[in-house]
Each structure stands twice: as C-alpha cells, then as structure tokens.
Length: 126
Image (cartoon, rainbow, N blue to C red; front, side, top):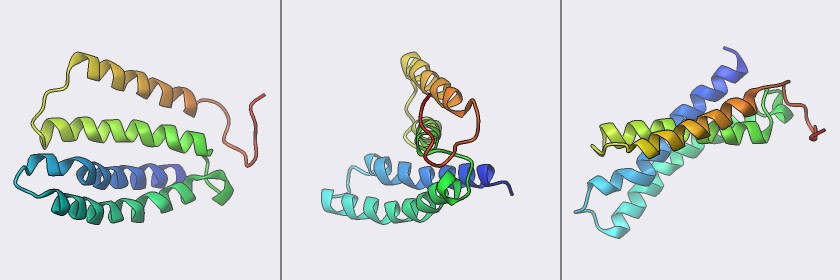
C-alpha cells in the first residue's frame, strides 16, 4: 500500500477515536465529570497509537511524501469530516449551512496544501 494512503487511513482511524474521546461523553449526561475524563483519556490512548505512526510514516523525514504542514492540514480536514459525520450520526445534531461552508473552506485549504511537489526535508518557502 502506498505510504500516502497508509498515512491517510491511519489518520482517519485515529480521528475516529479522537472524536469519540472528545465528544461522546456529551451523550452521557449521567456520567460524572471524573468518569467522563477517564473514559475520554482511555479512548485518546488509541488515538495516539494510530496518530503517531501515521505522522511518522507520512513525514518526509521518515521517507513519507508529506511535510509537517501538509500532515497537519490533512489531519484537520479529516477531523472535520469525521466530526461532521459524528455530529449527525451519533449526537443526532443537524449541521447548519454555515458549518458546512466553514468545513468546505478548510477542505479547500487542504487541497491547496496538497498541490505542488512532494515535501523535501528542510525545504523552505521560495
């Protein structure tokens, strides 16, 4: 499997865990604050188990095709995609038109970041 695809798939899986860790407790008003924190922290562990390898595997310093900035922007786009689905499916909340427009603008930023040549270690802006 190409490194870029592996990186994206690991980031998607990582973001699913992250979104549950950050927001699932909102569906559980009966959970005490301490339990919500511990449950979220436990889920976040699995986010890191996937996110750290994704960034290392995808970064140019480890033979990957992406710069750190590209990885971050891609991660944000993935996060919003996962979060949008989570809001609708899990939290049963409707996204407002302004939310969708904001998500689309961030997706456009991710596309702009992906344009151009492959990242090179230590490369700077012209």
